[in-house]
Length: 83
Image (cartoon, rainbow, N blue to C red; front, side):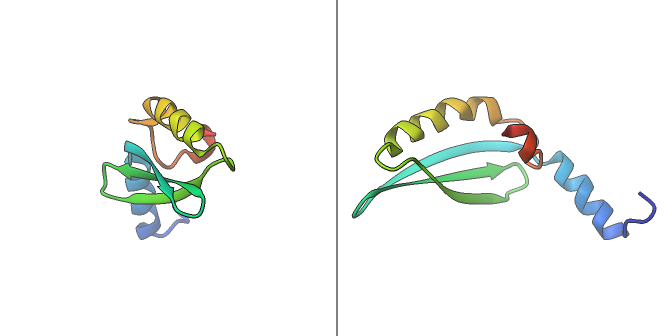
């Protein structure tokens, strides 16, 4: 860890403590139904991504809501672990 600059070490320390606090799916009905997912952390950082399976967005939104209970409270930086 000595080879890593101090600012990078600090970022790594903060990121290691960042927890997921909320996962919210949003269905948007336009010319087709689109599904967006917002993930919020206890550090105030939010991310938005698009998800879905064509013509099955409502089902995927339900699955996201069900799985959210497993991810809330987890370390937001362990993305490989969550997969």
